Image (cartoon, rainbow, N blue to C red; front, side):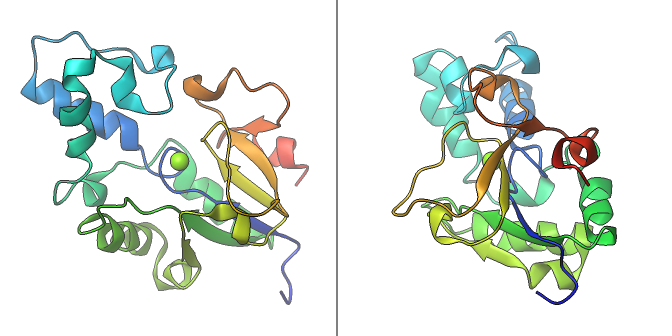
Length: 184
Ligand SMILES: [Mg+2]
């Protein structure tokens, strides 16, 4: 804790890494005949559900392929945003849930963090499917509701995405306004 003003847990997919855009890029490369749903119209947290049910499994399975997680582009401002938090003395931790089918996901998520932030940040990854067990003052996450086996210690601050705008009782931020929203 020495020197750290507070611990902020940061989700990886949909906050740092652009999971859904990459998934849809691949899907539409392979299906040029299907009209692409614009990002702002993606109102489902589970991206595949924005499409007709016959494609659900195919879209979901894209994320299980080798090289998928490795190839995710950063979300605009995310890399600089994390570096800024570190400069401000915030205790940044990556808190991310692995896929149940983990073969490629786990290693490639680590690789992604290593490539963009280096070994120091790899040492600060918590990989868990129950984020309520992890301690910290704030969790920045794009998922509308985060549940688990405990009442969380952290405040869930939404990373703004079109699919979480129906949630009105939580603070929300992006990598352009996080300093103001968090009062840093
Ligand atoms: Mg996420």
